[in-house]
Length: 168
Image 1 (cartoon, rainbow, N blue to C red):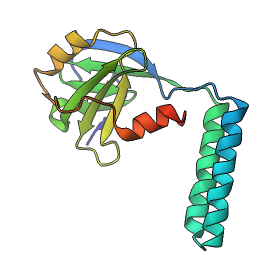
Image 2 (cartoon, rainbow, N blue to C red):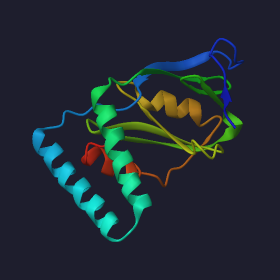
Image 3 (cartoon, rainbow, N blue to C red):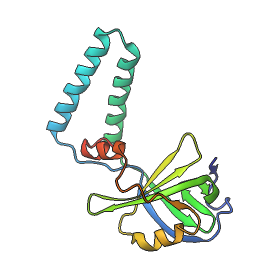
């Protein structure tokens, strides 16, 4: 379970690596993208109403509202740090004992991310962009405390689809 404290209040140890990331990528979307997504959304909404699946209709509408709100607001800057005792993401602190494994996907310029798998049910997988940070020193440091998942060589399918379809 992550500790939800301010960085000043949590005993996280000395900061070894730190940088700021945006909450999500804000994509440039063309009018064609909006037209295609609007048609897909309308088709899914029509299908859900015809089939009597009103819960799915609600989910489609909520998804559209979330995409609209995400597009109209700028993403927040989030502080990220790797400390002597764990990782800090925004106001959440994850001790190394709660992080079960990590892996780095480094395929510039498209993907430069580090992924952490935690014991937290709500935030099971954390994705942090590496930006211009050299991944080798980060990897060397993390290997002292966390198991590296060397079998993971690609970003998760959900992240790949979100990047391709400009959803997050």
